[in-house]
Amino acid sequence: MVSRTKFLRTMAAFGVNHICAHTPSKQLDGKWSVEALTQLRERIEKFGLTLEMIELPTNSYIATSGIKNVMLGKSPERDREIDGICEMIRNISRAGIPRAKYNMTILAVVRTEPTPGRGGAMYSTWDYAKAKEDPPLTEAGPVSADSHWERITHFLERVAARSRGV
Image (tube, rainbow, N blue to C red; front, side, top):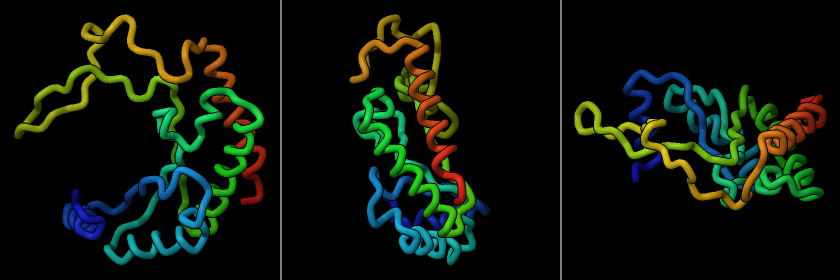
């Protein structure tokens, strides 16, 4: 694994100017404090880079997501998770980081086998013809399109309403 310092130096050497940071933690804790986020931003700036956005803990694998109950549609737990996300967004803003990103999908990132590419690289691939007809279910079980959209809508409406005044 490449050290963070080496990674930042490499990005700067390649001419990268703006980066997105990974999720500091899956839940609202000290790593999401204004002080910790400010330190992260300042550390990245020392390499001549701009911390353009930070990833919220909404990754697409339900089991490791910071919003598991949002994805499963479980109330009232999902509203507590949304409150935590809203505080993260406020702290991101207060730390001078202009954006946050999220990913909400029950199926995660669906892929088929990798495709060999230039220089021995392996490309992440989706080939509909090679996809399984009945992929294994996630821990959410069968979820209708309407239920999935309700969960996403619930999340977005509450985040928008509760994050005002950032």
